[in-house]
Length: 332
Image 1: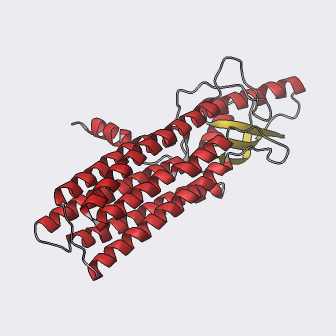
Image 2: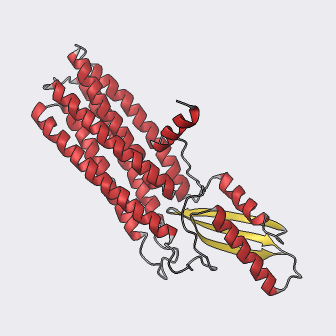
């Protein structure tokens, strides 16, 4: 398989580099912005609404798949008496539960702005990302506790074949959810949904560890399960760090430096623009708000100045598909 093909498969599965400050050209219809960024052409779907609807779709199906997976694992865990499988089932229930704060956030994002919340409710999505990170952290602590507890108090596992099958079921269910959560999250530039996808992937690895642990016990190595459990715990803490960094960067209004460079580039290449300064950008959920100052010839008539400002606005919209609002000041 060629390198481009391998990269395409990795990206499709969500293993590619995360574009937290992504500004790719997605196939979204652009809508014309007025000064506040609220105007749109009739008959054109607002990209932010489409992204939110897709986010809700991803969350609903995540919940269904993980709920079915956890139910199947719970039946086998109670039948076999496997403590490891029961712990993995608890993790999957927790993973399904992360859909709740994200669903609430995406629903709130559709509410109209008010005088109190004039920027809307997009930031609720970032707060939901914090909740997701805390749930991942809790899962890591539970996994670590169970692993250490098995060293101190070894537990026999009955029905090893069924336990292994349940572990494979948990891995498959979580990986399916992880793939489309990460893919949809990157398409919408939602750090919260991406973090939730990585959480599903770590729970899938935990399920796979149950399979390896059961195989180790079957081969006569009873400590195989807790050893693998500790390794998986370390991996989960790594995901906690990765997800927390992305979510808290958004909360602190952080963006990728390349995004600021692209804003500069787009505005500077508009005819009659003599310079661009004071560029600021921040994410409101998965929508981008931009502020900048452009320097123009002070002798230009007002009508020409308005035309240039609108040209800058269009250039930014072409370069930044997730752009929601643009504030442009005139300098001389």
